[in-house]
Image: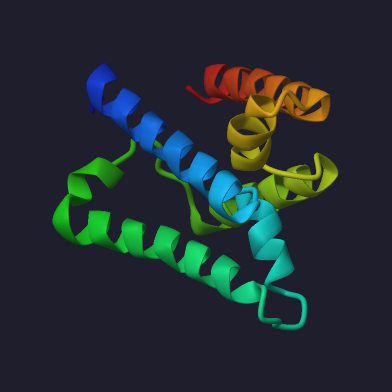
Length: 137
């Protein structure tokens, strides 16, 4: 299967992600770092946890909607075993913990705030992703 690059939909999607992150920061003073949001949900539930739970629920709901209404968007070329998916997920979790954040927190939110740590983390994420894609693909 060959996937077609669609720059318009990619630009619109990226713009919406940026807009959502900017609104969350400007209106509520919150950063949309997904790994940090998920990690904080494992702490005792507080009143400030509500928005985090809603944010994560919105991400899950968006995925469910895509699966229902446009499942062809979720088709990929890699056929991985469940054990490989679990190992990959654990490695991503370890990496986000070591980097004190994930691609959304560092790449979208941190870089736009000119955080040096976010620039280093994002460059590292991208370099590893490029190497991995070339080794696997």
